Amino acid sequence: MRKYFLYIFLIFFLSNNLIAKENVMILKLKTGDVEIELFEDIAPKHVERIKKLANEGKYDNVVFHRVIDGFMAQTGDVQFGNSSTAQYNIDRAGMGGSELPNLPAEFSDIPHLRGTISMARSSDPNSANSQFFICFEDAPHLDRNYTVFGKVIKGMEFVDKIKRGAGPNGSVSDPDKIISFKSKQND
Image 1: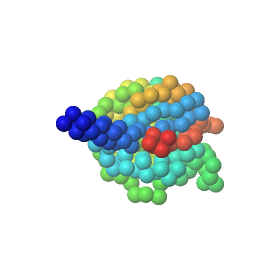
Image 2: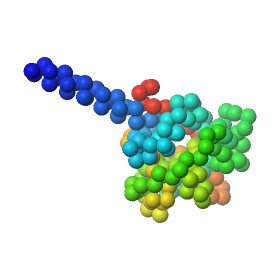
Image 3: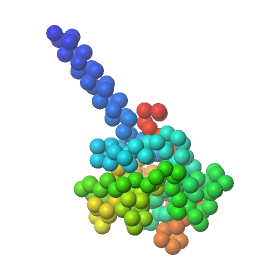
């Protein structure tokens, strides 16, 4: 009987560990690796989109085109923000998305605290596509207006080192970029 319970416990532990790893992403920056926990139960469509684009390598080499000190770092323009493609244009970075349709909002009561990761969008609440931002500081004015889909669980000190923008609205000349973005289970 003891072996049976041990066996059940082991299966339960391993399956939960796999599920947990499936919802942790590694954002590789020039200064170090950032671990991000995804909130699949809170924003399932947004998490699915992030995973899909990341698994296809769409976020690799994408710049942080808008970075405002004391507020947030925005990235994820896979159309114009990929510094290794012919479409890259620092003046247009932040104006594009992916070839996939926009997502309906999945607003929640999760607050925008330091390390929160949320989807960027236009004035239309249902316009999130591929761009996202990481909060440097708490930003309660964003609560329930943007879809929170994750949080930094390790490596926020590397996020803090992302080059800040000096241009209008936080635009960055010679911006830092995502080296790679992938599921931890693929690590």
